[in-house]
Image 1: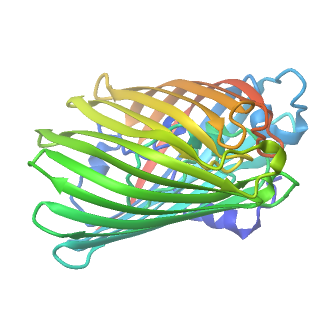
Image 2: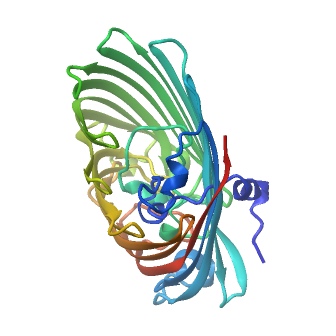
Length: 443
């Protein structure tokens, strides 16, 4: 039977979109750009509704990741097969002055050994961007998720927010059956000061509700404020300067509040390679001052930590149907599921493209290493992943999907993880199945 997850899950199942196949590895929603589904996505229509889904037969050498309490984490990993259906929709409305998007994903698992269908994760994102005046733009985006793969957030992704962005579903990276609900709100206002200079003010809020709280695992919140100045020096080259404030209560049952004040500056470079291809580069270097209050005296937490921060990304479509992308981030992270804030160094890299009009190939890898902000000498972690996928288009709307992934993490010391998850995990998995996209509406 399907476990009850209150009406939220039902709503997401009805209003959710199966993320592109790449998202099962990378966690980022990115439309396919070749023959597969390409004819649907390239039509110049102001309003689209895509109903999509995948049915995968999955093998894992560590079923504890999704079976949760049925497997003792102290025992040797148990391998086995299960079936993973993913269902959803993707709605887009494009207008001269505004854009609206509703995107989501739902992942279930049928485990024959226990004869049950179980919820793995579900998410939903809804947002709007609008041009208020010739030089003023606003963006609002709201996300909701049921038990997303929180540890996947240690791997850096692009920092820009677009309407419909969601928290990564990433069911391959589920490590616990612990139930939680996570909500996020992002708002930005940008306005042109001059022909080349733009100011941006933004804020974000995230709340995570754990249904079964413990002494360590309590509900968590984080809030951020941002201010930036962007100067477009030439058509391709720009400069950016900013101030960021971040605060959260993710440690010791919410009793410890950690604050970060960060200033940074950097550059952007963008170049049109062809009518359909654009290369983009971004690099920011900053300095952070981190402080915490409410920590137990025995921890001997420093009054202030000064750290360097880095945020860089690159997207290079070096051929018509081939793209390489990467990201690097060094900075403070509030990750729901971890009982302490961490200062992390993380990098991701990906390559995908078309071998032929029917064959799509993709590779991805990511690594993150860091230490607790409160107990840096005794608490640290390492995590990394790698994957390869192949798709073969049977028709313009169906494809065979084959994927392999490897995932490892190790949390040492006092970096306590979400209830039900082991401190250390190593996992290999294979996914084989069918992907379907139905263009339900074009108008």
